[in-house]
Image 1 (cartoon, one colour):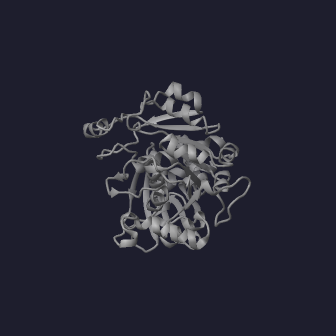
Image 2 (cartoon, rainbow, N blue to C red; image 1 turned 45 degrees about the horizontal axis):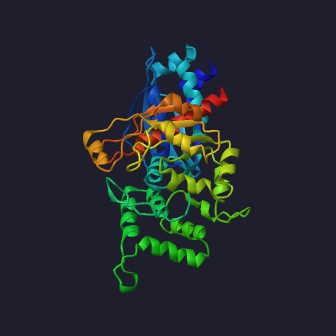
Image 3 (cartoon, rainbow, N blue to C red; image 1 turned 120 degrees about the vertical axis):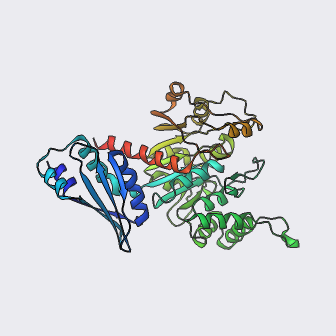
Length: 402
Protein backbone atom coordinates (compact mmCIF):
# COMPACT_ATOMS: atom_id res chain seq x y z
CA UNK A 1 0.00 0.00 0.00
CA UNK A 2 2.89 2.37 0.66
CA UNK A 3 3.95 2.15 -2.99
CA UNK A 4 0.46 2.85 -4.28
CA UNK A 5 0.06 5.80 -1.92
CA UNK A 6 3.37 7.35 -2.95
CA UNK A 7 2.57 7.05 -6.64
CA UNK A 8 -0.98 8.39 -6.56
CA UNK A 9 -0.61 11.15 -3.97
CA UNK A 10 2.87 12.65 -4.16
CA UNK A 11 6.47 11.78 -4.86
CA UNK A 12 9.38 14.19 -4.85
CA UNK A 13 12.76 13.46 -6.40
CA UNK A 14 15.79 15.75 -6.67
CA UNK A 15 17.94 15.24 -9.76
CA UNK A 16 21.35 16.79 -8.99
CA UNK A 17 23.18 18.61 -11.79
CA UNK A 18 20.41 17.80 -14.32
CA UNK A 19 19.05 20.60 -16.45
CA UNK A 20 15.30 21.07 -16.84
CA UNK A 21 15.34 19.71 -20.40
CA UNK A 22 17.56 16.75 -19.51
CA UNK A 23 15.24 15.78 -16.66
CA UNK A 24 12.13 16.19 -18.81
CA UNK A 25 13.54 14.11 -21.65
CA UNK A 26 14.70 11.31 -19.38
CA UNK A 27 11.38 11.14 -17.51
CA UNK A 28 9.37 11.04 -20.72
CA UNK A 29 11.48 8.00 -21.68
CA UNK A 30 10.87 6.46 -18.27
CA UNK A 31 7.10 7.10 -18.27
CA UNK A 32 6.31 6.10 -21.88
CA UNK A 33 6.05 2.32 -21.25
CA UNK A 34 3.37 2.89 -18.60
CA UNK A 35 0.85 4.77 -20.73
CA UNK A 36 0.22 7.95 -22.70
CA UNK A 37 2.46 10.96 -22.03
CA UNK A 38 0.92 14.38 -22.75
CA UNK A 39 3.25 17.37 -22.58
CA UNK A 40 1.69 20.52 -21.14
CA UNK A 41 2.32 24.05 -22.38
CA UNK A 42 4.88 25.85 -20.25
CA UNK A 43 3.29 28.72 -18.31
CA UNK A 44 6.22 29.73 -16.11
CA UNK A 45 9.96 30.11 -16.51
CA UNK A 46 11.94 27.31 -14.96
CA UNK A 47 9.01 24.88 -14.93
CA UNK A 48 7.83 22.07 -17.24
CA UNK A 49 5.00 19.55 -16.83
CA UNK A 50 3.50 16.46 -18.42
CA UNK A 51 0.62 14.12 -17.58
CA UNK A 52 1.02 10.35 -17.60
CA UNK A 53 -2.25 8.54 -18.32
CA UNK A 54 -1.60 5.07 -16.93
CA UNK A 55 -3.02 2.16 -18.90
CA UNK A 56 -5.06 0.31 -16.31
CA UNK A 57 -8.71 -0.08 -15.31
CA UNK A 58 -8.55 2.93 -13.01
CA UNK A 59 -7.54 5.28 -15.84
CA UNK A 60 -5.21 7.13 -13.52
CA UNK A 61 -3.48 10.37 -14.44
CA UNK A 62 -0.25 11.46 -12.77
CA UNK A 63 1.05 15.02 -13.08
CA UNK A 64 4.85 15.29 -13.36
CA UNK A 65 6.18 18.77 -12.56
CA UNK A 66 9.81 19.80 -13.09
CA UNK A 67 11.32 22.91 -11.47
CA UNK A 68 14.80 24.32 -11.83
CA UNK A 69 16.55 24.60 -8.46
CA UNK A 70 20.08 25.62 -7.47
CA UNK A 71 21.25 22.00 -7.27
CA UNK A 72 19.66 20.79 -10.53
CA UNK A 73 16.01 19.88 -11.14
CA UNK A 74 13.27 18.98 -8.69
CA UNK A 75 10.60 16.54 -9.84
CA UNK A 76 7.26 16.14 -8.08
CA UNK A 77 4.57 13.62 -9.07
CA UNK A 78 0.97 13.83 -7.92
CA UNK A 79 -2.51 12.59 -8.85
CA UNK A 80 -3.93 14.86 -11.54
CA UNK A 81 -7.63 14.69 -10.65
CA UNK A 82 -10.02 13.85 -7.81
CA UNK A 83 -11.15 10.50 -9.24
CA UNK A 84 -7.56 9.22 -9.48
CA UNK A 85 -6.88 10.42 -5.95
CA UNK A 86 -9.91 8.67 -4.50
CA UNK A 87 -9.20 5.45 -6.36
CA UNK A 88 -5.61 5.54 -5.22
CA UNK A 89 -6.66 5.62 -1.56
CA UNK A 90 -8.30 2.20 -1.69
CA UNK A 91 -6.72 0.16 -4.46
CA UNK A 92 -3.80 -2.24 -4.09
CA UNK A 93 -0.48 -1.59 -5.77
CA UNK A 94 -0.24 -3.14 -9.22
CA UNK A 95 2.85 -4.60 -10.89
CA UNK A 96 3.09 -1.40 -12.96
CA UNK A 97 3.05 0.71 -9.78
CA UNK A 98 5.88 -1.31 -8.31
CA UNK A 99 7.97 -1.14 -11.48
CA UNK A 100 7.41 2.61 -11.87
CA UNK A 101 8.29 3.20 -8.23
CA UNK A 102 11.50 1.22 -8.55
CA UNK A 103 12.48 3.17 -11.64
CA UNK A 104 11.84 6.44 -9.84
CA UNK A 105 14.09 5.26 -7.02
CA UNK A 106 16.87 4.74 -9.56
CA UNK A 107 16.25 7.97 -11.46
CA UNK A 108 18.77 10.18 -9.56
CA UNK A 109 21.46 7.60 -10.27
CA UNK A 110 20.53 7.35 -13.95
CA UNK A 111 20.65 11.14 -14.28
CA UNK A 112 24.20 11.24 -12.88
CA UNK A 113 25.73 8.18 -14.56
CA UNK A 114 29.48 8.14 -15.01
CA UNK A 115 29.89 6.87 -18.56
CA UNK A 116 33.08 6.07 -20.46
CA UNK A 117 33.04 5.52 -24.23
CA UNK A 118 36.11 3.83 -25.72
CA UNK A 119 37.01 3.84 -29.39
CA UNK A 120 37.74 6.12 -32.31
CA UNK A 121 36.48 7.29 -35.66
CA UNK A 122 32.87 7.94 -36.62
CA UNK A 123 31.63 5.09 -34.42
CA UNK A 124 32.95 6.92 -31.38
CA UNK A 125 31.51 10.20 -32.68
CA UNK A 126 28.03 8.66 -33.10
CA UNK A 127 28.09 6.99 -29.68
CA UNK A 128 29.09 10.24 -27.97
CA UNK A 129 26.29 12.04 -29.81
CA UNK A 130 23.92 9.33 -28.55
CA UNK A 131 24.87 9.94 -24.91
CA UNK A 132 25.61 13.67 -25.00
CA UNK A 133 23.19 15.58 -22.78
CA UNK A 134 21.93 12.42 -21.04
CA UNK A 135 24.45 12.51 -18.23
CA UNK A 136 26.88 15.12 -16.86
CA UNK A 137 29.57 12.44 -16.39
CA UNK A 138 30.49 11.52 -19.98
CA UNK A 139 34.10 10.71 -20.87
CA UNK A 140 35.65 9.60 -24.14
CA UNK A 141 38.83 7.49 -24.01
CA UNK A 142 40.82 7.55 -27.25
CA UNK A 143 44.29 6.40 -28.18
CA UNK A 144 45.57 9.90 -28.98
CA UNK A 145 47.59 8.48 -31.88
CA UNK A 146 47.38 9.79 -35.48
CA UNK A 147 44.83 7.94 -37.60
CA UNK A 148 47.08 7.38 -40.60
CA UNK A 149 44.94 4.47 -41.74
CA UNK A 150 41.90 6.57 -42.56
CA UNK A 151 41.58 6.97 -46.32
CA UNK A 152 39.11 9.85 -46.50
CA UNK A 153 37.58 12.49 -44.28
CA UNK A 154 34.58 11.10 -42.40
CA UNK A 155 31.20 12.65 -43.06
CA UNK A 156 27.61 12.43 -41.94
CA UNK A 157 24.35 14.02 -43.08
CA UNK A 158 25.53 17.43 -41.84
CA UNK A 159 28.77 17.41 -43.81
CA UNK A 160 32.48 16.89 -43.19
CA UNK A 161 33.85 15.86 -39.81
CA UNK A 162 37.36 16.36 -38.38
CA UNK A 163 39.90 13.73 -39.35
CA UNK A 164 41.44 13.00 -35.95
CA UNK A 165 39.67 11.54 -32.92
CA UNK A 166 40.31 14.61 -30.76
CA UNK A 167 38.39 16.81 -33.20
CA UNK A 168 35.62 14.24 -33.63
CA UNK A 169 35.09 14.19 -29.88
CA UNK A 170 35.08 17.98 -29.56
CA UNK A 171 32.38 18.22 -32.24
CA UNK A 172 30.29 15.37 -30.79
CA UNK A 173 30.29 16.90 -27.32
CA UNK A 174 29.30 20.39 -28.47
CA UNK A 175 26.25 21.53 -26.44
CA UNK A 176 24.01 22.43 -29.39
CA UNK A 177 23.58 21.61 -33.09
CA UNK A 178 24.59 25.15 -34.03
CA UNK A 179 27.84 24.84 -32.07
CA UNK A 180 28.40 21.39 -33.60
CA UNK A 181 28.25 22.93 -37.08
CA UNK A 182 30.44 25.89 -36.10
CA UNK A 183 33.09 23.55 -34.68
CA UNK A 184 33.06 21.41 -37.82
CA UNK A 185 33.88 24.45 -39.92
CA UNK A 186 36.47 25.77 -37.47
CA UNK A 187 38.36 22.53 -36.91
CA UNK A 188 38.22 21.46 -40.58
CA UNK A 189 39.25 24.84 -42.00
CA UNK A 190 42.44 24.60 -44.05
CA UNK A 191 44.73 27.58 -43.55
CA UNK A 192 45.66 29.65 -46.64
CA UNK A 193 48.67 31.54 -45.38
CA UNK A 194 51.97 30.72 -47.06
CA UNK A 195 53.61 29.24 -43.96
CA UNK A 196 50.60 27.14 -42.91
CA UNK A 197 49.06 26.41 -46.31
CA UNK A 198 46.69 23.43 -46.22
CA UNK A 199 47.01 22.73 -42.48
CA UNK A 200 43.74 22.24 -40.58
CA UNK A 201 43.13 24.98 -38.02
CA UNK A 202 42.06 22.32 -35.49
CA UNK A 203 45.49 20.70 -35.65
CA UNK A 204 47.18 24.08 -35.15
CA UNK A 205 44.96 24.91 -32.18
CA UNK A 206 45.61 21.59 -30.41
CA UNK A 207 49.33 21.74 -31.17
CA UNK A 208 49.60 25.28 -29.79
CA UNK A 209 47.73 24.38 -26.59
CA UNK A 210 49.86 21.25 -26.17
CA UNK A 211 53.05 23.30 -26.47
CA UNK A 212 51.78 25.92 -24.01
CA UNK A 213 50.62 23.38 -21.41
CA UNK A 214 53.42 20.85 -21.87
CA UNK A 215 51.27 17.78 -22.57
CA UNK A 216 48.72 16.66 -25.12
CA UNK A 217 46.14 15.85 -22.40
CA UNK A 218 46.43 19.27 -20.74
CA UNK A 219 46.15 20.96 -24.14
CA UNK A 220 43.04 18.94 -24.98
CA UNK A 221 41.50 19.83 -21.61
CA UNK A 222 42.08 23.51 -22.36
CA UNK A 223 40.54 23.13 -25.82
CA UNK A 224 37.45 21.52 -24.28
CA UNK A 225 37.17 24.37 -21.78
CA UNK A 226 37.72 27.01 -24.45
CA UNK A 227 35.04 25.49 -26.71
CA UNK A 228 32.68 24.87 -23.76
CA UNK A 229 32.03 21.23 -24.56
CA UNK A 230 30.27 18.93 -22.08
CA UNK A 231 32.31 15.92 -21.05
CA UNK A 232 36.01 15.11 -21.10
CA UNK A 233 38.32 13.55 -23.69
CA UNK A 234 41.02 11.35 -22.18
CA UNK A 235 44.14 10.07 -23.92
CA UNK A 236 45.31 6.52 -23.33
CA UNK A 237 48.60 7.29 -25.12
CA UNK A 238 49.85 9.56 -22.32
CA UNK A 239 49.82 6.86 -19.65
CA UNK A 240 53.34 5.67 -18.96
CA UNK A 241 54.26 2.50 -17.07
CA UNK A 242 52.95 3.10 -13.58
CA UNK A 243 52.76 6.86 -14.07
CA UNK A 244 49.43 8.69 -14.14
CA UNK A 245 49.13 12.04 -15.85
CA UNK A 246 47.63 14.68 -13.59
CA UNK A 247 44.63 16.58 -14.88
CA UNK A 248 41.16 17.79 -13.94
CA UNK A 249 38.88 14.84 -13.29
CA UNK A 250 41.68 12.25 -13.29
CA UNK A 251 43.09 10.06 -16.04
CA UNK A 252 41.74 7.53 -18.49
CA UNK A 253 42.47 4.72 -16.02
CA UNK A 254 40.66 6.51 -13.19
CA UNK A 255 37.67 7.27 -15.42
CA UNK A 256 37.40 3.61 -16.44
CA UNK A 257 37.77 2.45 -12.84
CA UNK A 258 35.09 4.82 -11.56
CA UNK A 259 32.55 4.40 -14.38
CA UNK A 260 28.99 3.11 -13.98
CA UNK A 261 28.81 2.15 -17.65
CA UNK A 262 31.59 1.52 -20.19
CA UNK A 263 30.68 1.44 -23.87
CA UNK A 264 33.05 0.14 -26.52
CA UNK A 265 31.96 2.09 -29.57
CA UNK A 266 31.63 0.51 -33.02
CA UNK A 267 34.79 0.90 -35.05
CA UNK A 268 37.77 -0.68 -36.73
CA UNK A 269 39.61 -3.11 -34.51
CA UNK A 270 43.11 -2.14 -35.63
CA UNK A 271 42.58 1.63 -35.69
CA UNK A 272 40.10 2.26 -32.88
CA UNK A 273 40.14 -0.50 -30.28
CA UNK A 274 43.57 -2.15 -30.30
CA UNK A 275 45.57 1.09 -29.76
CA UNK A 276 43.51 2.01 -26.66
CA UNK A 277 43.64 -1.39 -24.99
CA UNK A 278 47.35 -1.74 -25.80
CA UNK A 279 48.11 1.31 -23.65
CA UNK A 280 49.56 0.48 -20.22
CA UNK A 281 46.95 -0.35 -17.61
CA UNK A 282 43.82 0.09 -19.75
CA UNK A 283 42.99 -3.63 -20.07
CA UNK A 284 43.45 -4.14 -16.32
CA UNK A 285 41.36 -1.08 -15.45
CA UNK A 286 38.60 -2.39 -17.71
CA UNK A 287 38.73 -5.89 -16.21
CA UNK A 288 38.71 -4.59 -12.61
CA UNK A 289 35.91 -2.06 -13.17
CA UNK A 290 32.48 -2.84 -11.70
CA UNK A 291 30.75 -0.89 -14.49
CA UNK A 292 28.20 -2.38 -16.87
CA UNK A 293 30.28 -3.18 -19.96
CA UNK A 294 28.59 -2.87 -23.34
CA UNK A 295 29.96 -3.51 -26.82
CA UNK A 296 28.15 -1.80 -29.70
CA UNK A 297 28.92 -3.68 -32.90
CA UNK A 298 29.36 -2.09 -36.31
CA UNK A 299 26.49 -1.94 -38.77
CA UNK A 300 28.71 -2.27 -41.86
CA UNK A 301 31.97 -4.08 -42.51
CA UNK A 302 35.13 -2.20 -43.41
CA UNK A 303 35.89 -1.67 -47.07
CA UNK A 304 36.85 -4.92 -48.79
CA UNK A 305 37.09 -6.67 -45.42
CA UNK A 306 37.82 -10.38 -45.76
CA UNK A 307 35.41 -11.86 -43.24
CA UNK A 308 31.91 -13.28 -43.02
CA UNK A 309 30.63 -9.95 -41.63
CA UNK A 310 29.05 -11.27 -38.42
CA UNK A 311 28.89 -9.95 -34.89
CA UNK A 312 30.57 -13.11 -33.54
CA UNK A 313 33.63 -12.39 -35.70
CA UNK A 314 33.77 -8.85 -34.32
CA UNK A 315 33.63 -10.14 -30.76
CA UNK A 316 36.17 -12.86 -31.45
CA UNK A 317 38.67 -10.19 -32.44
CA UNK A 318 37.75 -7.87 -29.58
CA UNK A 319 38.31 -10.44 -26.84
CA UNK A 320 41.92 -10.79 -27.93
CA UNK A 321 42.58 -7.48 -26.19
CA UNK A 322 39.35 -6.66 -24.32
CA UNK A 323 39.33 -8.71 -21.12
CA UNK A 324 36.15 -10.33 -19.79
CA UNK A 325 33.54 -9.84 -18.65
CA UNK A 326 31.52 -8.22 -21.43
CA UNK A 327 27.99 -7.87 -20.06
CA UNK A 328 25.98 -6.87 -23.13
CA UNK A 329 26.50 -6.85 -26.88
CA UNK A 330 24.22 -4.38 -28.63
CA UNK A 331 23.92 -5.36 -32.30
CA UNK A 332 22.04 -3.81 -35.17
CA UNK A 333 19.22 -5.79 -36.74
CA UNK A 334 19.93 -4.89 -40.38
CA UNK A 335 17.24 -2.83 -42.06
CA UNK A 336 18.68 -0.63 -44.77
CA UNK A 337 17.21 1.28 -47.68
CA UNK A 338 18.39 0.40 -51.18
CA UNK A 339 20.47 3.55 -51.67
CA UNK A 340 22.46 2.78 -48.53
CA UNK A 341 23.25 -0.76 -49.68
CA UNK A 342 24.26 0.43 -53.15
CA UNK A 343 26.57 3.12 -51.78
CA UNK A 344 28.40 0.74 -49.45
CA UNK A 345 28.51 -2.14 -51.96
CA UNK A 346 30.47 0.15 -54.30
CA UNK A 347 33.10 0.43 -51.55
CA UNK A 348 33.21 -3.30 -50.89
CA UNK A 349 31.35 -3.02 -47.58
CA UNK A 350 28.31 -5.07 -46.50
CA UNK A 351 25.95 -5.29 -43.51
CA UNK A 352 27.15 -6.92 -40.30
CA UNK A 353 24.79 -9.82 -39.51
CA UNK A 354 23.96 -10.54 -35.85
CA UNK A 355 24.56 -14.27 -35.28
CA UNK A 356 23.24 -14.17 -31.74
CA UNK A 357 23.96 -17.73 -30.59
CA UNK A 358 27.63 -17.62 -31.62
CA UNK A 359 28.08 -14.07 -30.29
CA UNK A 360 26.65 -15.14 -26.92
CA UNK A 361 29.84 -17.15 -26.31
CA UNK A 362 31.61 -13.86 -25.64
CA UNK A 363 29.03 -11.94 -23.57
CA UNK A 364 26.39 -12.32 -20.92
CA UNK A 365 23.61 -11.01 -23.15
CA UNK A 366 23.20 -10.21 -26.85
CA UNK A 367 20.50 -7.79 -27.99
CA UNK A 368 19.70 -7.18 -31.66
CA UNK A 369 17.51 -4.20 -32.63
CA UNK A 370 17.26 -1.77 -35.48
CA UNK A 371 19.63 1.00 -34.48
CA UNK A 372 20.21 2.67 -37.85
CA UNK A 373 18.48 5.64 -39.45
CA UNK A 374 17.18 6.11 -42.97
CA UNK A 375 19.64 8.75 -44.19
CA UNK A 376 22.19 8.34 -46.95
CA UNK A 377 24.72 6.76 -44.60
CA UNK A 378 24.37 3.35 -42.98
CA UNK A 379 25.23 4.48 -39.46
CA UNK A 380 23.77 4.17 -36.00
CA UNK A 381 21.00 6.67 -35.33
CA UNK A 382 22.18 8.61 -32.23
CA UNK A 383 18.66 8.93 -30.78
CA UNK A 384 17.89 5.22 -31.05
CA UNK A 385 21.32 4.20 -29.80
CA UNK A 386 21.20 6.56 -26.82
CA UNK A 387 17.72 5.41 -25.81
CA UNK A 388 18.81 1.79 -25.98
CA UNK A 389 22.00 2.28 -23.99
CA UNK A 390 20.14 4.01 -21.16
CA UNK A 391 17.42 1.33 -21.23
CA UNK A 392 20.04 -1.42 -20.93
CA UNK A 393 21.66 0.35 -17.98
CA UNK A 394 18.26 0.84 -16.32
CA UNK A 395 17.42 -2.85 -16.71
CA UNK A 396 20.77 -3.87 -15.23
CA UNK A 397 20.23 -1.60 -12.22
CA UNK A 398 16.76 -3.04 -11.66
CA UNK A 399 18.18 -6.57 -11.73
CA UNK A 400 20.81 -5.64 -9.15
CA UNK A 401 18.28 -4.30 -6.63
CA UNK A 402 15.81 -7.17 -6.92
